[in-house]
Image 1 (cartoon, helix red, strand yellow):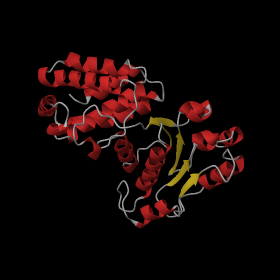
Image 2 (cartoon, rainbow, N blue to C red):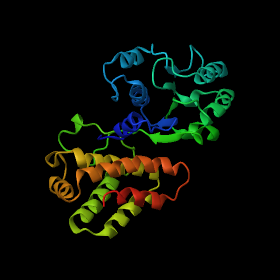
Image 3 (tube, one colour):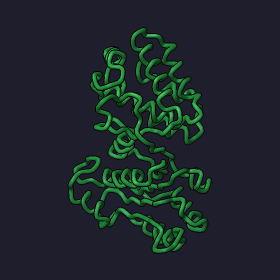
Image 4 (cartoon, helix red, strand yellow):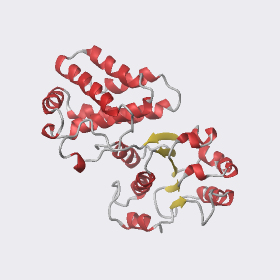
Length: 288
């Protein structure tokens, strides 16, 4: 569990994924790949995040009866209300053979306004074991009524804040922030101060750094990805081996991973307008 994507997949594997998620980011292919991986995770016969089982193979071939991809048809520019009505009707039915029905809408910003409105009740009160994955470059392209019914997750480009010469072997899909490397540096320095000096004030400072960021959800996603990286990386492969080794020496791996899990939970809590500073302080408290 070393990336934002793997955190999402692990949440799906545990059966804790929100019934409706908006995956947004600059790379349509990355969003599609992750949505298919989520569908596999929710239906894999072996209980993994995707392997070579019959279910996963059928999802790849788009022949699985419980995984549906809603796209713009033919030479049209929008996903029609007729397509959405068909989705809504299918969503009322229980899975045919998988554990979950999964509907991928690609791209969700191609939904016509009548089409988007016709699926609001289904998004708000979905049938059991039904998941909706909406893909878009930006949630701002979607109707507010759609956004209010789904959890928003940014899927960005590679973060280079921690990795060294072998970074190409461990691509990390974390939030794309204009000041990503600078923010990661502040997080690492503050975490190192807590680890080596045992200063509780350093944890409060860490919470402040993240919660005061303009893009707080993306900052939390970066924080969670860094916890995973620190837990998993060989310090010799990082840009600051000494600092990383000292953090690992004083903070057990299980606490780093617990804080990473808490980071994903924090993003969900922000969707219900929770107090940002308190939510992030609860994340870093998992390190104690």
